[in-house]
View (cartoon, rainbow, N blue to C red):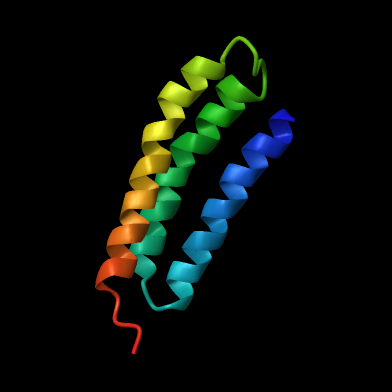
Length: 83
């Protein structure tokens, strides 16, 4: 279950970064990838070794980067010209 949790968060954000790049928004794609790096670090150091004891610490450490990634994606899509 810990691998599914880590993979679902990471792969979803990689997919969104790929989508942002595909709509010609490489800067936002790079921002999202940069915000993904600390999350992967915290997954490797906190979540995967001991998910039961480190759950709260992992959520507190990585969640802000996830939220900022969602915010960056929303800002990108909000100003993007889809026509």
